[in-house]
Length: 541
Image (tube, rainbow, N blue to C red; front, side):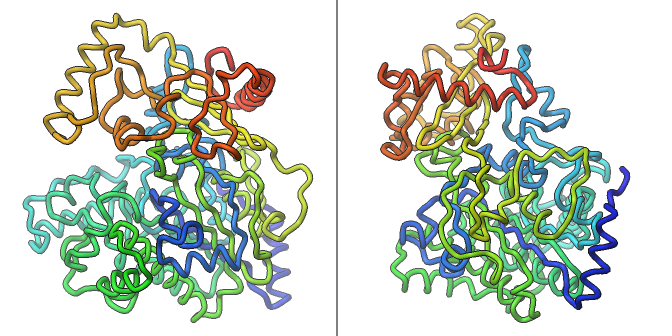
């Protein structure tokens, strides 16, 4: 792949050198599965002083969205600046229906010839680093993961295999545009059976943060971009990881615990409890907050705090069982931009999303992306500065599985369409498959028998993963009733007034008084779909 170095780079480097100034740095915090309750400044239920400061002294975007509300496509959109349905990975293409309906799920991958914001920044003289959770596919170019020979994380043979697998992960991720990769997970800690077998499927937060600080220290004299994708607050339960041996990591049992990077784990709980946080799950939010504080202190110690933009984004929400859907509980997330002297403090109410992160970085750093890099997002910098942007988007597109949605003004329209090819098999066959799958779910997870019933119609859920929904789909959408939207869940057309009904309990598409608004929102969605790959029922034949 040809390296893109715009002619403006030489002029920019010469100008900054002559002025005795340095180009700005960027740190992107991309967190995982954070409920709104885990942000102290939003609901006051968690102790998160460092994150609260980002919102208080930076620009807080209260109408931010993850355009696809599960881990992989959310990260794809952040890294590429485009909607996940533009993915060209083989696995993604193979999941497209016979009618051409693309299905955005965990089937993401970044091609060797695909531009990412780190690859663009790398080509423009920046040092780029990645720490934490990748989860955007892993190739086999550098070999395949080995199976550990035993379960003892202190055994040299076991540690050797874990080191090999970590090196493989890091080499693959580096190929996507990173000079430095460390403290990396291919996906979630409990996705890797090697880590589960050895008991190393934990949130090794000190280990991750150590690598982030090492990257900043190493490149403190050069402009840099750090993408820190924390594994917190995803499963396995972070509050359980707080209790285990802090030497446990994806490298096995470290010889010594990592100290001086973060406050002691027991102190995390103590401070959270002292602040009135009794819920163990929310106490782990303080652990994540410590990560943000550690990075900020490192920047301050090196005199880089006023030269570094901090972007904070949560990959998707988990409120109201909305993860994996276009509902607010999964798609609506907080976003903050923080840069003293540049970003004007205060709340912003414009519609923004993770697709805007890459363009914002380019804009701040004076980088022109290559012409062949398609960007669906736009720079947030003018909004963050407090400027009035007359032509800012008035509608935002969301996608996941078999649903598409648009948010505009106070309203959201959600379309759920099951492709005809999914329903071609006789109901008896689909129902038999569904019953067999449910029996396996019951055996592995006995607690599901209380509320997870057989669907006599073997209907597809909004992710479209299997007749009647597979385990992951049911867990994320219907696993913890009562989810407020379940009464309307299977409605093909759904219209919500987000101002009056933020939990989306009343489907206005059924109300004749909202027929004109429904038609208007359908038209907005159809217009957005027209610029994207794939078909979508009558909205994009």
